[in-house]
Figure 1 (spheres, helix red, strand yellow):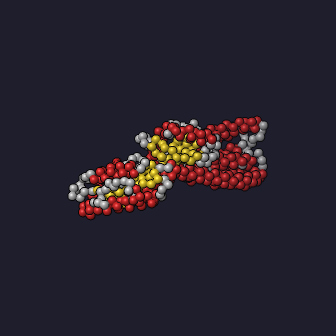
Figure 2: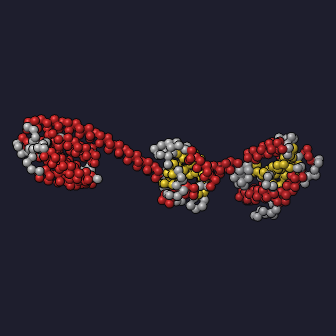
Figure 3: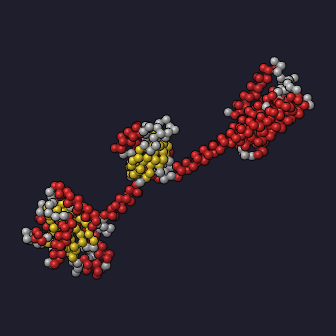
Length: 470
């Protein structure tokens, strides 16, 4: 492109010279020197520009480039006799240099323009070069033209410096954001409104197992669950260009290995775009949600057995009582304390004691119904909530099952230290008692079972006369 410009200038110059020479506007006796200079200027300028482009900050190359530009301009305008009248030609040269090489060429160019004009005026003064005006007027015009050229060059240099600074700031900003995207943990990408991915940041490899090149050109629907596609399509359709963060939602994406990744997605439509693209930011929250779920589980469950803890059991009981109030159900409670556990724990150590608690918890879980709630209240105490029981028989049947299950031998526990359970049972209708008092009655019945020989069940005192203890 630059060489074409350098070639067009001499061609246009020759055409102008021929036209004006015919009207005797040029003070030259022969066209050949000017033609030779115009033809030679094109490759000289092109080559010097190419050479400077290899090392734009090299002072020698800057000066060589400025010398060739100033010399070729001075040679042509002074040989036609219009030297001081065409000072503007130097300004055009300055503009081209500043455009192509930056503000660094301003001072070298101005220096060599002054040298070229002074040399031309010396030639005019001694009659070596032609002039369409008197030498004295030529000198005056040359001085005035240099002053104007200095002002114009200064303005052009400041403009070029500002442009260079803006380009550098834009380049640095681009590199900064490119580095952010390249090293970000989030997936950041550009998706067309029809769903096809144009680009995706390198973090797609960490989150989904694909390279950016593998996902580019594919439809984002391939990575989404089918049920969320209509929702996202509606959000994208309704989003106007420039709508920042017009949608924030959680999605499950398909990983290359077949697993799913939960991500927090933010969709936005860039203001500078015509509305054809959507910027997506996808933050992987798979491990975060798993950790939150684990923390919630740990807060409500016993660490050793995995059963509900006392706090969670109390909340479950409150919910069951509220349902019983609404539907008129009866609610039952079994309070279970292991017999012989303290002997095992003290004689054989806490490790074997933990084994006994874990195995007992498993056996208790096998005894209850799906709708029943089992919890470890602490130590060797457990509780079962029976929702919607018909009467004492349901609770007694469960208690008998538990007594049989708990009495079965446990590996590594000597036969000389048998394990059993004392069970207290309490049952009330929805209008009969609060749930906290129901647990207290079941606890009292459990202590009654211990007093009456252990490894048995007892029902609370108000129902005891209607039921034979086990």
